[in-house]
Length: 633
Ligand code: FEO
Ligand code: CA
Ligand code: CA
Image (cartoon, rainbow, N blue to C red; front, side, top):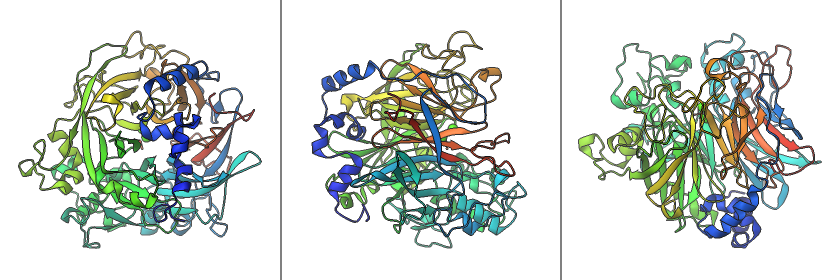
């Protein structure tokens, strides 16, 4: 069944929790409000729920930092592996080969590498079954090939491309334990060579045409898929992040234009090295191929035969994730960060309203709408808890100076060169925007600004929500839109937490804000997730050296915060060399799915199992309570 092609309003309501019945029930404070931004619920009702919830918002004991090669959890919790890199998705697919000699064809039918953002789609009418769409961001040649180095043939490039993209899998709860369902008809790989349709204002533009695709509408592949989003109409959004790193040049003296430079084009492809064996990635031969990547891609997980769609109306940049919200008048909003030092935060507002009764009617909703970029004021300069105001600036051709005089001959060019358009309208250069999430309780929006060692130089003033020079720790920004309407183009912002190390540094800013202490300190917040009760889960991708500025912080980790009090506790610590990224919850909130990406990135790990040659494998973990209760409560 395709949710994009059938009128399944009842099923869809079950999936996204949007039925009118649930709006007025107790559940309305939970899942539904995630998309509503609180507009259907009076603030007083929400305030009552908040104060009730705060009595025991964080119901677990925080744990110490750790440097061990395992998962360490708060007391009373346990973890198991749901799926790991290389798991065959069907029974007849080749088994994972730890020697590195597995083929590209085998990898195309196995779970991809380096899992990142993921969403869970409950199976209509069955609380014990669900689909998960999981990003596979990149691969690590150290473990992918027997020689441990860069690809040396077209076959090896093909294998690397097969590691990336998205894996759609079915999961099932048996005897209380969520497990991967091998052989499900929904299990599917989308990878670096899967046919994908380009749609929206930039589709068919000359800049996205290549010798292999004169239509400019048929792209091969999605790769470097970082984090994700889930639409209220039951589709998955996968975000293309460091796509430029996959491109290089056979001409060592190739000159890049301003746009190519702004998107980070290099001759060397930063050692990913696909271009010597796959001319599609050679900018000397196929410069327009670069413009066909860096988009948000929409996937229908319930239709294994559906063609994914790149939605160009959402702009082209190094997309981190996509956070869905809804305006008071029922239109879709997508908040998005561009993860590079000094890049911007964006929002897209659809032209048309979401149809909650007919999923098919939302098929092209993300093709029509308006893109905006954020500008923040200098704020009040409070060192512990700065706050201020901001506005969204429209990125539409013919407005705000975006015309031919600035190099934009139409909306397609504004979108393909969104970074240049953002600069032209004076957007604020941020400390690497990573994940964005919307509170299910009050509609406030939270965004991780992971770190920025170049803040204070390179045209990036210390200012507003980016208050520290050489910012190695990061911070979490939040904003509340005017009238609590995500359509509003003005907002108030504050910093929820400024990370730091109070055991090494005295006083702000390097010690961090007052809600950081020796027990909960961390660096480089990256992934974010709200559970139904409104707890904010924080996942880190930082320096795990446990030394110098980072002494005492240990391995990368997951923490949990009370958004109303600012209290933060450490809930989980990951294995050696990993990043903790990707989070999702079972509908009953009794299982938490979390990603362990690139354990042993530089060696030193055999997580999660001890294979003969000690090869670690990225994995999705399932965390449950030993007493079967709600996670975090
Ligand atoms: Fe893929 Fe910005 O993290
Ligand atoms: Ca990230
Ligand atoms: Ca990161």
